[in-house]
Image 1 (cartoon, rainbow, N blue to C red):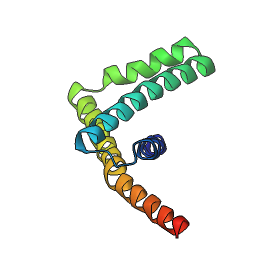
Image 2 (tube, rainbow, N blue to C red):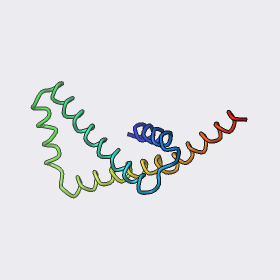
Image 3 (cartoon, rainbow, N blue to C red):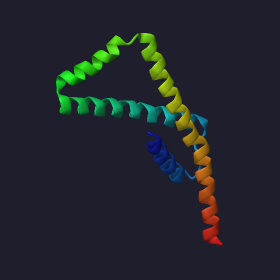
Image 4 (tube, helix red, strand yellow):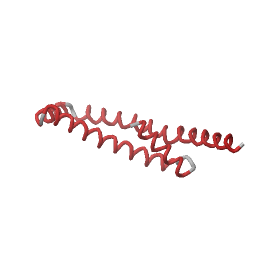
Length: 111
């Protein structure tokens, strides 16, 4: 997920010629998190289904039914919060640093 966020940051900084502002960073961070969740669930379901069959997928889903709702929400919320903070760092601090390094390389190439 972090490498995908970093790749998206490099692409956007290269295309726009500037670092994303706060609202763009939030939108990009939420988009990366949603894509990460969707891809993770699809790959997990496909892996369980193709390796062990439909019963393995059902058993895995029963693990979540055994957890209390509070534990599940706090766990998922904590992971999403951590991922969002990391993505915001990539789209904020790392984007500005990448842009600065690009500008230094351009001035060295032009000199």
